[in-house]
Image (cartoon, rainbow, N blue to C red; front, side):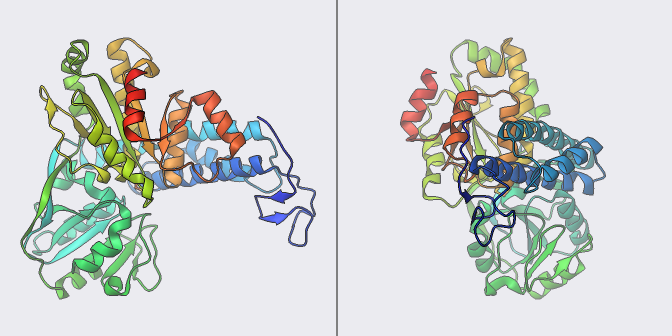
Length: 435
Ligand code: SF3
């Protein structure tokens, strides 16, 4: 990797040796090392979020804990100056994140059963309501138990959509639907719908005054001026919902389907193989990731809309809200849009890709499969490195390059992993289909 010492310190945003430099100019850390250090921090943060949710369901792994300790220590200002070592640590973070997502998947399945395809209502039904947002399935389960028989309906928002696929969660008839889209519509949505709101994880935003007094956080989420519930007793949220007006009957424009798991797709493997060999399925696309309110993110909808009819779209995370209202139909009984779940369910996509590769007797990179990923934050960085750690090449990334990528790092990512930036949807599709 090309190295270049620079007098401007990216790490502490000071001129090395200048008045604000705490290392008296001797740290000498290059901008590339500092950015790789940032990358490792982001990946470790993402992994920690998944680990948190596994731990709250009673699942832990000392090897993951030990890696996180090493990763955080490596980001000291003055302990590791070696760019290659940071790339190795990033790959290791990717491997450890696979282990973490697998742990969390096991925890979710043991607690709530394996998801099966489930239709989810959008829009509202008459009655008082609580909206749960974030990723916390344990918190949602506790809320559903405590609201049972109260007449209060529970709605999911954003990354809690996949909760509807779990038998142990959808068994509650008062889990009535999903409202809104990706995390960044919450200010508008929560202001408009007079429900109590429970934020269960990351991807909450500072609330608007219109709904601050009916919002609550739990687990790792905290917001100023918003009551925080440290355990799983949601009495306060339920009491607040009782004070609010009933929501009207207002059917949504679409019904969404979520809850595809390995167990529900593998029985279709024989049929999928037959369709691929007969030329009726030309290519699979994994389109998903952490969505961002970026102008260029319209790419993902245009991309899915422009795909030919003989292609299948696998999706996960909140990036799917860009296009999961589209009616893509099916290919001889195989749905063209398959929602695998939350961002941590990337592990399902990985296992599915491996199962398809085994089925066709090829490596994952030789499958008719292209990954088109949107990235936004810490978890997406951890997942990107998981994919790279698996040796997956030719991933398309967008809407823009992550901030920690500079020219030197990009050169490595392109040379080693053939990482590509998204461009124009139709041109990209033509390139992908010919590749
Ligand atoms: Fe990412 Fe919030 Fe949407 Fe879980 S973590 S997907 S952005």
